[in-house]
Image (cartoon, rainbow, N blue to C red; front, top):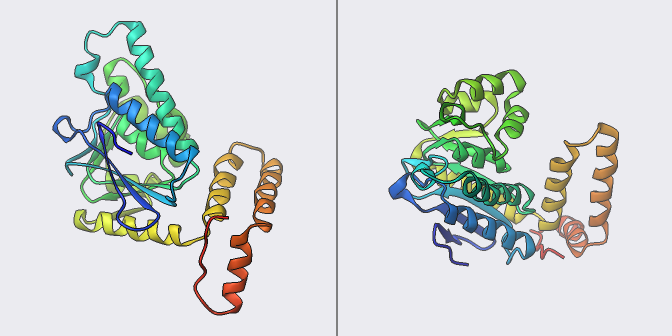
Length: 262
């Protein structure tokens, strides 16, 4: 797959690195990037192409994503603005619905839609020194790519209101403390750490990983009893798989399993 605004790399079997690739404009989200992200996440949902885990990062190293491209948006009609935002909405939803685990490796500042991308991933690591913010209210808009929903689920309602209603930037250390990030790393150690975690995920049974991700993601949107039932339905789909048989056999034969996603 090739895209105008994204750079893709497969550093090891079953692993994919996706880089936002507009470093000359702080990886700002323009219409083409929205189309490219929508196409990428949709393609991986329809056919994983053997990919078992994605590391989502950015080119340049200074800014992960500054949010929407305000130069492109300058002078847009209301209709054009809303049509563009529809593309962005679909791209973010496609990311959140992607059955393959996506780890954000935040190697630069993430503002507005950039932070919303991080929140849409399954979990996130970041480089020390990066900063985050949802700045939309300072521009006469509001978060519209999941920020008002995903941020409270990560940090709680009161903290999310403070972050969103002030538009004030916060540090990577605060993001870690508040639950937005899973870990902080020195800049040079960020990608190795993310790839190590991605490799561990990719070494597990891919159908099991997908079903577990689905159970967590959708179960949190249900009452507890319904979530239990949803979990069991997801679990039972794994009982008849070749990978389940291989997992038990390899354990008893004291060898590393060879999962095939079947």
